[in-house]
Amino acid sequence: MASGISTVQNVMADASATRGPEGLEQVVLNVPGNRRGRNQAEPRLDPWYYAVFFKLLWIVACLFATSVIVGTVVYFMHVLHQASLRPRPKEIIVD
Image 1 (cartoon, rainbow, N blue to C red):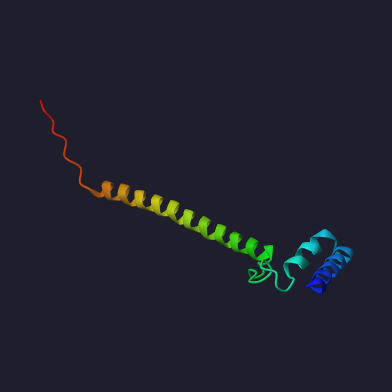
Image 2 (cartoon, one colour; image 1 turned 135 degrees about the horizontal axis):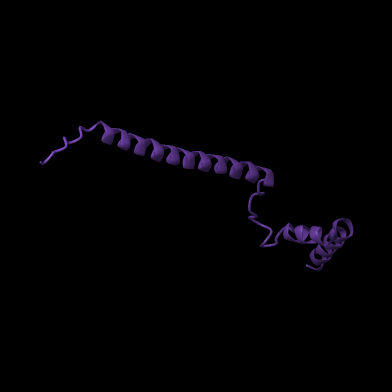
């Protein structure tokens, strides 16, 4: 067991010497037998993918909002046009 501890200490010292404290945490998490190091989540996508996804989502949302506005205007134009086609009642002139 003592050799395992010294190996971990060597790896930690190696990581801190080459990569600084950020690399130290990563190496400690990946030590075999470390509970937190097992079953790690898959690596996340690059931020570039998220930016493209949200840009496309924004474009789709804008197109949807535009179609709702245009549809509302067309509907009211249709209603007003139908109202203008109805025959008007004749004026009743009372003497």
